[in-house]
Length: 84
Length: 128
Picture 1: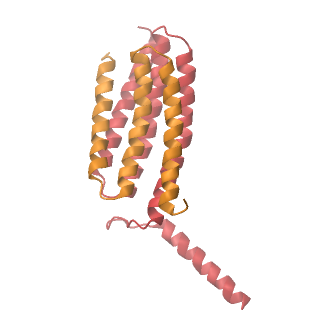
Picture 2 (picture 1 turned 90 degrees about the horizontal axis):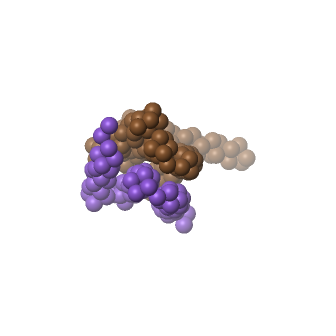
Picture 3 (picture 1 turned 90 degrees about the vertical axis):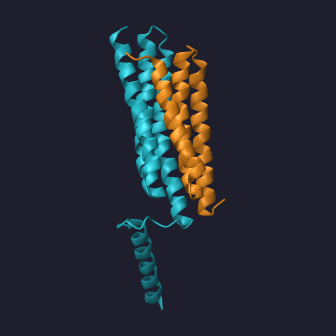
């Protein structure tokens, strides 16, 4: 089939599109939503990189990154509610 | 290439197309609530496709089975935590006072809050 470079390019285009919303977004929550989607996409990108370079250690990096981004988004949501 | 690698590659293609469509919705939709609605669901589905597909593809290419197990662990974690973070974020947006789009017709959360407030008022009047 098409090879892994095509998929990496599609993920790069998706990241650029969400980057547009980060710079443009009228409110703070718009930017936070875009950053949340970007972290989700980055986890998938790291898993693909682990296959591209054939290193299993990237999978552990992706798991830790997913946990940290979840904690970060929850902290920002608490701050927006006024509870932090 | 074995059959497992073909299935994995097809799942990765499916997931990347869903990533692209979700970020397209992030640009096209009119307000925060619609953007979150269209972006979070399809990004979660795309992540599942990419991650599980990469695990299957790696096993099909002759790499170790650790790829598949670790990929499934990451996928289950994302499937559990992504809706929670989206819910918390949009609740914070509503409570910090961001208005709905003018074309929106249903606001169930405000109805719920008003109903709760009126019930509380009735209880207080009954006590007097």
